[in-house]
Image (cartoon, rainbow, N blue to C red; front, side):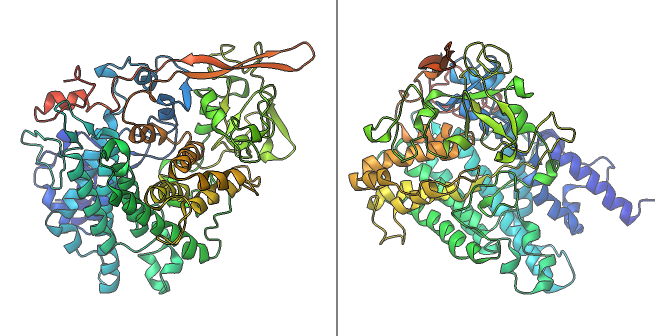
Length: 610
């Protein structure tokens, strides 16, 4: 005889199978023959499971990224002018050089992930079943749970839709600007599914609507200091850090409007899109400064980004690292060269290195910078030294005086391109996000937690600065209560990832702000590049900023370094490493989906994938 407890256990097991399986695993009846999908509403913990599994942060292909070591994180920069993959057979590299085949699509998993996760939240939202479920006996606590879960469902759907739009939105081979198929009801996988892509504008409208719906139900943020009644913190507050909250939905709206306002998707330059991007980004900025910043140990814009702190106050929304293990050395293995027991899986380009200014804030191309091409790494912007490992750089334990490793990227050096299959091809390696307390030669190896900051303070500052500049110019603070110039100043003056002081005086920022919208826009784009490198966003930024393929198809370069007999070095900083050959500014709709659903229209430039 099946007891009530056994029945709950069976349902939990079945739901787990449903959530991690393929679309076919949604079929009814369930294995014991007398349970159906509708039974989950009889048990209070089951609808909550739908939302929890919709986050699904981990390492699986159907999971949200919990780190940056994947094709929508650091590797994706290798399809841009920021970085180069060491493996020449890697699928991201194949994309960059125009050699990707239908069986090598590195983005198929993300399409599948979005629709599987959205199906879970659609089950929750359908007929308001999740909201109408009773979760606990006490009405006050039950209301806290119901409203939070309902808001999370809308917010998660908005996030996955934004993810689809950013990755797969583009001009179809029919000439129309298309997004993704909008699905707001649970799909019946017992019947044939043949979806069509909605227009780009319709997809934007759906994302914005879901964000607004979520905002009505969610707390502003999951912080204990925002929950005045201590007893309520069992069901609200900081224990839900890492889950969707109200301010995250504002950030999603800002990012969505920013892309929709950009030249590729806004040929008429509709200023209201820029205005909305600035407005919602500023709302997030104000929250961080005026609410989060007032809390004990709260946000401070001067402080460095703490990549190893999953509770870093600069986070808007991030992965919940404990789901995927508390500590690891994945980033260090990925970035360090073979000589320091890493895999050197990718390397920064010379183009990225050149984008860092000098310590006085001037770009290396400006006569005022003081740049010396014979000594190219001297007196650079302090941020450079916390992002890039270069020839002669020293890895010191916890950035103190204990030397762990010295980089030798000169010809014949242990870290030089070609000296090992685990060395970068550009003669640069990556320091950003690395734990400087880790040394695999130590008797006790100190690994630390890592997580992915999906949205953080800097993203909102960059969004605001770019958008506000296009509406009112660089220096006008009247409209939004902050100028684009002062927003960028936050980033240039902030402490580096190593804790070094940022730019204390910044005449170049003043000059570019005085030069007007176009000059300041170029500065903002460069700041965006420096700030977000190896986070996977430049791939999409370059595409939204451009209306042709020219900027995508520039060759990328590295350093060629010769050690002279007197110990000095001769630098050739224009050694071509890889050509790029994009046929499209858009990613392909997954080939297997095109084959399965005749209503799907493929993106321009991928005609052979249909």
